Length: 181
Image (tube, rainbow, N blue to C red; front, side):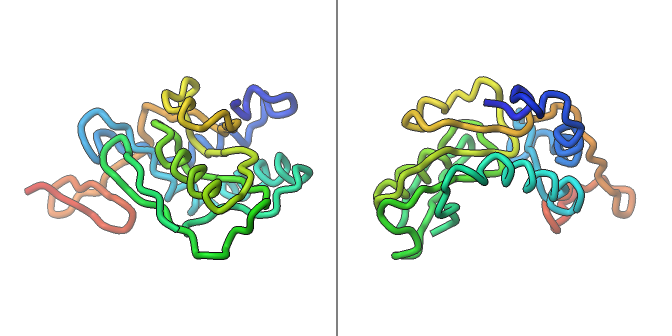
């Protein structure tokens, strides 16, 4: 379910501002990927507050007792690599109602691993939420029937301009500038 499809948020200007606050880095980390870098969203105080406020408004009355963070291990495959989630033993108790929030969903790999991990420790996953996601998430079937709530769709055009160092264009990823010479 997309936030923009939800009654009350259909014409909410906050969703457009959130989307525009996300930097699009073309062809990173490999050709064809339009990397949705939420670092710029986190640095935009108003857009980040609006993101948190929308999630809080949605989940306030759902009886969520824990929001999953990184913590026991569960390996998973990404669109362009592999990764692993871990939980501190005892961080989530059996029977707790968990909400999984991720920055972006593409293949569903991270969310699927988080669901498996939380269910291994006995938690009940209520819903998965993402800031950015595709309308037709190919990995939705990997979520074991868990609802998926997405704020905005990925943008294809970029609001990203790479600085130049000594006349050489650079590519910024977080706080590291890479350049080709």
